[in-house]
Length: 339
Image (cartoon, one colour):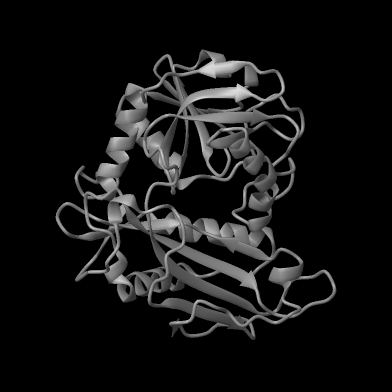
């Protein structure tokens, strides 16, 4: 067993033993390659460096109470990466290749899978980028697909305790008809400065409004927003928002719990009507909001110091499915044998 303080592990990069790579050239994907190097040899004119031909995914492997290791809805990650590749004209990674690379990366780094009950998991990062050289603005002819893993703790150091976030008007995360729906690096680069400012202001994260009218809730930093009121689970619908696999799963669980699910535009003024609100995504699962503070108007939307009952039930149910404690009635998990 790796000598790691699993219970106090941050959400960050921790070196592991191996990563998996595959090259696309001559209109076809090659064989999977195993590497022990943490570095890539990349052409100086690679489109991933110059023109933003880059997409990534994030999923986790969990050690369950029964000792088994599970992946959660990897097929949806594979589909989303294919959609991102389509959006910025990269070669698509076939689902089988995606799965084989992910499983191989987990298997070869099995000693880094955190034990059950520590709150930690093995984060899996598939990466696809244009590795072929171009000087003109056009797609590459060669692509590299990489999968590396790293053990991580909670995304927010508060864990499942409510956080305070800053709502901003003076920054946009993605253009209305741009790349917001794709998991590409540029969207995250655009969020770095407002997020850094929010941290400097004493907040855990930043909440964006829609770029066109500044009237509707967009992304909650690197995650989706949701609110709960009147027996409803409400989450924004927009082309600028990344389709979150966690949010999609929470919608299903919400229905199982008897909530009505509404995916629609969420006006800024509606923030004051929710009983519970939070952010959801692979890294945090759910991060409940203590309050939202509008940086421009100073208006505060307060939800309480303790996570609400529905947020708590949604979180414990989803985490329970991922760790094998709650019956997987929707067939979301894949058990990796022998780990």
